[in-house]
Length: 245
Ligand code: NAP
Image (cartoon, rainbow, N blue to C red; front, side, top):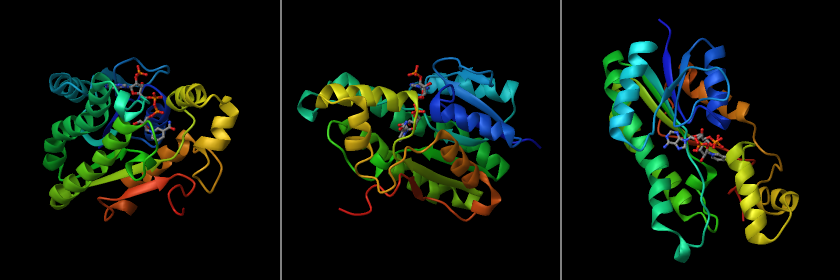
């Protein structure tokens, strides 16, 4: 039977690459996003911060595509400010989308995974789930939280053949990364090229942006049977960011 996957934030960037890559490998991958995809891929409108919207999206997905046993918690956004000026509204928004959204989507799909005695949850956290950078208080907190939540779910779901793993990318070339490039250039009074080489890729040993296809390939590996004993892991795709001083 064809497997069904939900990819949150699947209308853009990394999520869209994952949706297309899973579809090419024979999985029915559906984007759950607040906006329609820029390309023709299966889509259900969903704001992951609302339990009612998530439940509704789940029902629509089952009705139109089948019962999902794969969940990629991907959607996210960035906001940068020093902690003492960080607007509470922005803090709440980032935590709601990246941490509470991961919790709500997982909570909603887990019963179906248990029913099928098989499932895969893959979270797209960030290297900022393991290390910190200035001005990213809410992002770093949410992304660290996702890794903790994944470990709890990995323990609870092991007996149901459900694995839970987290991918921690460094910088990936997407609209979100481009927006950060512009913001960092403003904050640091630098050109965007200077920000790329002197700030973004500075902590990485391999001085290259990761591609969206590389994240999609790692996602497919965690879904594969080759990975059926890997759970609770947080795997970096970051050019070695955080390895040394
Ligand atoms: P992106 O291109 O901005 O895509 C994110 C998608 O999520 C957008 O379509 C966005 O819609 C959607 N979204 C926002 N709020 C949502 C909500 N409440 N419910 C459902 N969907 C929502 O971002 P990306 O660069 O591909 O990033 C994807 C993930 O990778 C994020 O979790 C990000 O933190 C992580 N990541 C990215 C990088 C990088 O360098 N790009 C590095 C490390 C980790 P709108 O555009 O309308 O807001």
